[in-house]
Figure 1 (cartoon, rainbow, N blue to C red):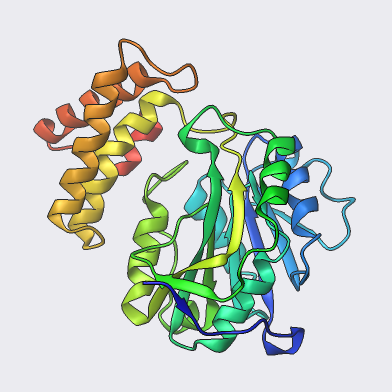
Figure 2 (spheres, rainbow, N blue to C red; figure 1 turned 90 degrees about the vertical axis):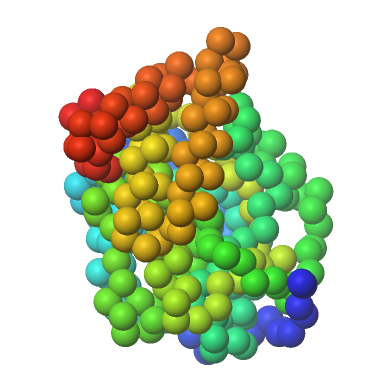
Length: 301
């Protein structure tokens, strides 16, 4: 059900930080940051967390961007950013290849200011390149221009937020000492669902119609197909064990991904290592039999 309740608010309502973890995409992250700084409501702070100097090359010269490094792993990098978000009310986490529509920040801040029960929000994707070969920056810009000026106050309850563009109410994060689960290493399959499930125990999660953007789906700098395939089995089972997934969701996630990898391994998409993922699935199943299944095992593969 779509609701329409709030109007756009002004700067004095609260402070918002944009946090962007990045690995191996120095060209892409510069573009993402420059677009983020062109918002109708400029973020109060922006922190980019890489794993070494090469990840953040070119960012030091951009005014208004703070650059830090942390040990590689999406949860570890997100947590490093969270530790510095002491003076803000909302944090908006973006993937390093997410291009926001101009009013994304404005719409997000308005939602949190107008609805105290909100603890997390996610945007309305105009296009998601992670499900295909991906989009160029030029294609993303054209998609956003074609969208025009979207409605600013529509929203609907969501089961969780999508990690490529999710905002969190920091008071809730602090009150309940919430952190991203660092047992989910590297790309950390499903870490966004795990975190927003936990924060969702304390309030509402909403998908905002006016917070739009394009996920480029850049293929470089991510986990290998073999490791990702292992995570597709290990992570849902681990999250079931800790209570973030119920049995149906965990089994469904594992079953769907294994079936897709098996069905397409003979004729894979050129941008997906289906055979590698299938091998990773098989290794995870073998580890279940051995009694050694764990998310961290991908670090040894």
